[in-house]
Image 1 (cartoon, rainbow, N blue to C red):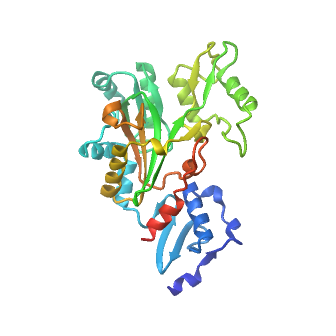
Image 2 (image 1 turned 30 degrees about the vertical axis):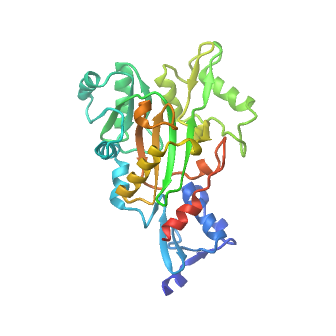
Image 3 (image 1 turned 120 degrees about the horizontal axis):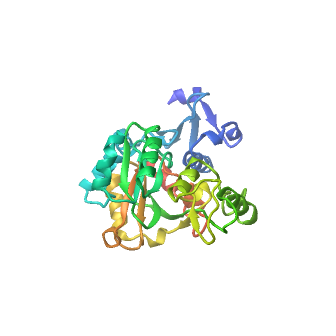
Length: 337
């Protein structure tokens, strides 16, 4: 493999030249693990974050959130929320009732077929972009549809399913980790606005900040969508005692609480089957359930999404509460099988 000699070799000494802010966290974790364990790393293009890893004569390519071992059809299927739901239903796994629409004229049919409350999602988005997590009236439904339509030509409307939000990350070698995502909240006092309550929480909570257990609560479009879902804006005064969620989990200031030891075996069997059928080395499965230690058909739980690209391993390696679960070694070892 003489061509590797013409590429930039990444070493602990020049690792700092890579702008890690532009690399997905999972890729960063894999590169760090590789360097510490004698795996050679080469940068293919000076201006691109494309890497070749070499171990025992085998090569694996990494770019953004993909590896050369990933099935491109499986990845593209997972990116389409509607196709993913169809696949899961075919496999006999529970999903939220829903419809894909492309016109506001179809909203009347939505309200006839799926009762409020609803969740509105752009069909082909990621990381919570354009999602309105709780819609319970016609006016908000129209507004949420138009927002999602600006992001994706087609919009997924689903029944809102109550329960806790879990992320299960499953590596095709059978290793896994799970966290329960807990939103950041503000609690009204009848005097301060939502924005003022967020500022107070960020300033007064000693657990929040750089290199602390919790991140500062970030005010993003997702924050605004959560507030709007529950009838508020940033300048709204929140009633005394009213508790309002602001995000899905730890990325925006909530928590990632390790739940790996609680996952029911039937849910792991499900993850194993999905991974094999989609032919993906690692998947992230987003689940809503009241209790992940019980089968989904007992709790009314559903699978809401599959992440077919590299899911964020850092939420398991650095949970805000619970045991650390480092899946980077398992994933690297599987990629080099």
